[in-house]
Image (cartoon, rainbow, N blue to C red; front, side):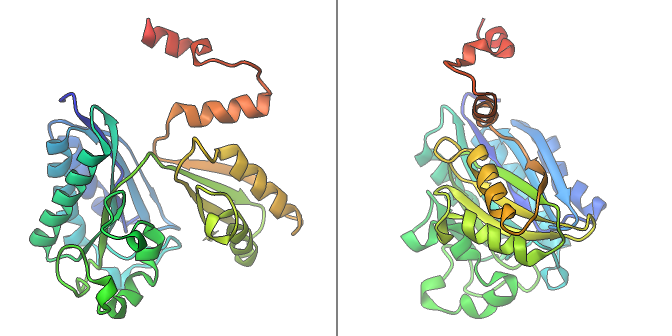
Length: 300
């Protein structure tokens, strides 16, 4: 593995078919210069989230191979799930980790987007730091309308794709590729099956509704468990911490007489995000990372 390292967290619209999931993940296992860190599939969301780390060439090769499987195997006309989605390969973000600038991550995102559009005849949008215009920075803005609504949306001049045809792929839909800061996927579960309560709380918590600055949130119905969830993307954990989101959800849930019954983290997250939570809830004063045993072992 080279000195240049990036993280990539591609999201695919398949969380139920184990055989397809394994075929999508396989290129990340086999490609030189890439290490598969984690993958998780959720039946309610009907979504696969893969977390890999690697050098630019290895990531590009493995991502395109995984995309080829997803485009072939996933038919968005038959896809149903709680998570918003617009394509078989819904989103592919690149995150600088070591010896890589954000500008280099943007260039990699553009190259993957260009090749994906050419190989799969797929409309591709660039988002976040790779966005070609301010109204395309926010993934939620691009994805609004989802797969079903994109057939009309893509015809509008302002929504012409950055790469690929100006029409939705008949089965694979639309894809977004971008570059961004590390994101923490953090979900909080509520002790109720009332999705209207989850939706109302999500509106209060997310930034667009007047809530936390670096928080995106939606209400999700976990039918198999008989509960609902606030599903969040924390886009900058250094400025809006996990405990802030958790505590705000508890406050908002109280007005409905509902309790928080658990939470979950999807994929990989920076250690500092959890350290901030521990320091807050334990009320630790003058805490230093040097007090963590594993850090001292790594640092020597």
